[in-house]
Structure formats: structure tokens, C-alpha cells
Length: 288
Image 1 (cartoon, rainbow, N blue to C red):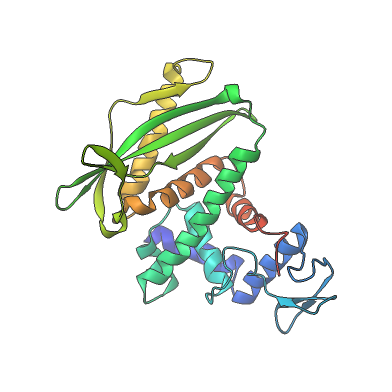
Image 2 (cartoon, rainbow, N blue to C red):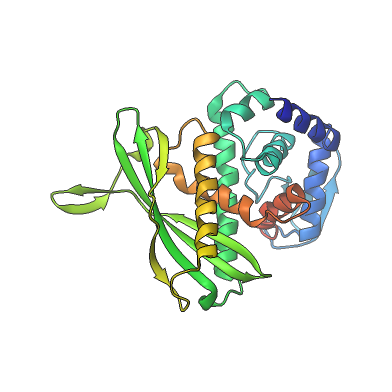
């Protein structure tokens, strides 16, 4: 808790008021470029009193939230920045319950829903990086492993996860994780499980043996690469078990997206700034 207080003091120095947060988003959006959804014009003027842009052609107004993960939200911009600040700069991320007490909200569901919005944006960035990257297919390794979720009723659910390792970008390892749908057997046939959101699983384990299902060109990875993969999986388990009070397999992909986003930006010196710029940039040219 003391560490959270020190980080909160640091954040208060950077963004003392909500107006400072709005101005920060304003500068980021203007650097990336604006275009009106209504008419497509890029000519805008800033209305200082309203804290909004106005299109010079069709007169349509838009706030800094439009076209981002904050769109249609009534939460202050400063609270969104504070959530990203703690998600990126905390050692093992942060739970919705901890953020609820820091932000001073009365409802847990509000904070959790805000976190899910941010995680969805992180997942969109991860997929964009994978699809639009300049990776050579020969540098990609694909492995699968399982996470086993155990509920209080001692019911097991197994989820298969694919790990893609990209070694071609500036000699820095980047990962991508994809959770496959849960499967159950009905009349001898495997079908996708429905209603997973009803269960809360508190224990998370990985199988001790990693099954390498597909390796391109290079065969089985070296002992050094295998050790590195096990370290990644260990860090993932620490995040799921040590940070969150429970994890639902139904929302597993969002938690994986957050882990991957944080991991791929691990070497950035200004982690918070790069994270906000990346998340805003996803819709920076589609606003209005």
C-alpha cells in the first residue's frame, strides 16, 4: 500500500487536475492528426471553454475521448490516465479492487469495466503489431501450453494457449498470446463451452511439460530459449495468481493482452508515455 501511495503522489505531481489530463490528451491527438467523422475534414479549432474541438467545415464538435477507449464514458480523463499509470508502472500490474480504493469509487464493477476497455485496446495493439509487423516467418516460433483453472468446487477447466515468439525486431524478443475457447465433451464430441462467465476460478496452474506443436525451420528450441519461455509462463502465472483475486476463463484473453502489452514495452525508458501514445494512436485518425 505504501508503494501505491508513493506512485499516487508522483501521479498527482504530473496531473494535478483533470484539466491537465485533458490538455495532455489534446496534445497527443493533435500530434497524431484529426479528421472529422462527419465530413472528413482535418481543419479544427479548439474551444477552450468547452474543452472540445470544432470542425471548421461542418461545425461538428468532439471531445478528446472520441475515437478512443474512453468514448461514451462519463469518467474523468484523469481517472483513465491514473489507471494506465498504475497498470504500466506497477511491478505485477494491479487489480480492480486496489484501483477501486485508490480512485475512491464505490462500485467495483465500474473500475473493472474501465480496466476491460483498456485491456481490449491493448489487445488490438498486440494484434496490429503481429499482423502489420515486418517479421520473417522463419523467425516465428509457435508453442502451446495449458492453463488449468480450479474452482472452489474442485472443478477443473483447461484452456489451451498459443505462444508466438518473434525474434526479428531489433534483436528483442516479443511475444503474442492467444487463448483458445474452452472445450467440453458432449456425447463423445468436443464442443465449445458456454457460460464460462458464471464460474470464478481461484487456482491457476500450467502443465509441467511444454508441448511444442509447431516449430518453423529451426526445430526444437535451444535450452536457453526453452528456459526463457518457462520464465515468461512463470511471470504470467504470478500475474494471474498473485495480483487478481480470481480469474474467469471467459475473460482470459483480456488478461493475456495486458500481460503481452506490458511485456513487449518492457525496455521503454518512458513506459507510461509510450503506452498512452500507443493506445491513443489506434484511433487517432478516426475521430469525430
